[in-house]
Image (cartoon, rainbow, N blue to C red; front, side, top):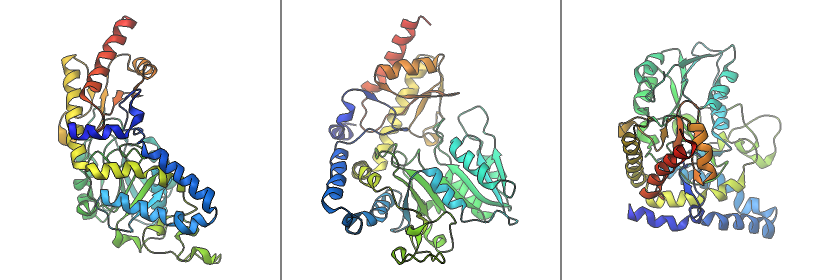
Length: 384
């Protein structure tokens, strides 16, 4: 623990709060301010020349940096504005008018993706949504049974945002591949806190972002496409940067480039590429395996603290099934969460699961204990 806490000095943003919400927004590294200054200086000093000298290459360079954290080959990860857009690009690669036109999802997914798939498939494709039930653990066999020979895609989170349930992604991918389907893995809630190896998993697509456990700020999201699939796909959500010669400005037809840029479209969000790099560098230096070990220590501490108070938690008890978040599903959770925020305990509330608490490598055991003490204090003050 002490080794990881040495990195706390690189996060002055932690000095005036209990930052326990890294599953939603990671703390800002000190170096991020310097990266913002670099962007401003580049713009001011080089003006339009900044594109050719640096900015055009950043989507590839940052994508490769992300790729090294998930064992993705070079030139297989491209930057995207958000995960919903990334998955829309994937959807646009496929024909849902054909016989194989089913997509399998679960009802516990982040709603943005459910909205996307429902809207995209319309009357042509078939969307099968597996019901997860009231508990934090997804019925894996029920999901696997839904994946059949008519399935084209399975869109699933590796860690679920409400329950922090860590799915057996390998089992899902194996079943999908057995029947000829492909898997889109949303790794947003895992990236930076749970080790991932996309080559070992043989996953077809993976989408995630740097906003949360990477401490990389908004908009720096990404899409991994398995290299042997990449050249076979022609996304209809596309644009000039996906063209083999974007500066030829050929208006007649689309001629796709190879590699990661094949899945780009319009002009990229360059500022986000600057902002995300300090967090990426820190997490890469520490190693996700070390972060995972510390994360499990902290989530176990929270579960044990809750058990000592007879509080209910909405999270798997088993370490191998648990991501980096514990939801305290206690009475008056929404009201308590608002008071906690007013007192600089940074957490959030989700209906049906309670107060989500997500410590990271820079948090102390004392901060974890403090939030339990503060909740007790609030309960006494409110006379519940």
